[in-house]
Image 1 (spheres, rainbow, N blue to C red):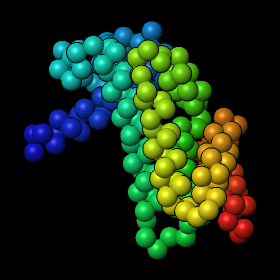
Image 2: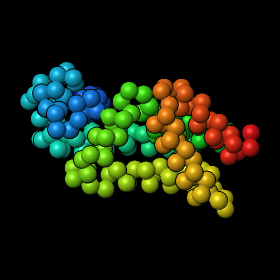
Image 3: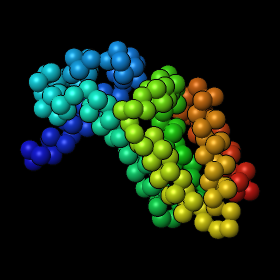
Image 4: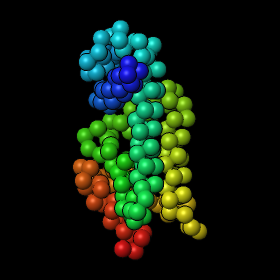
Length: 178
């Protein structure tokens, strides 16, 4: 039971860190800011993460891993029509980042390549692979690339997650001929 609490607590810290990093940027965020947002002591934060770069990498990796895993589960949902599974997967992958924090998170990830290495390229590729697998067929690669580009454009133009879902569903329906 104790290790479960630790995992839940660490997840809470990472979720709080994402909000703080997105709001203030990497350079202006302090470990104290994250500790306060996560309602944890500074020594408690250092128990989980020995440095701000380590915390940042873990935060981005956690967020991206959570998005890709949620999308994978959506696409694997038995009994759901492909358009519905695709809409849910795209919502999990990037719809969750629509809104006030969207631009901040993109800047956060893109402005700190030295801290993240191949992480920003790795997770979109993993998402693409699961979309291609779900679509299957002769043009699956091209369709996946087109839907991903569409989702990225919609993410930057939508004001809310609901707007993202609606517009992405239209794009998917066009692909599926619904």
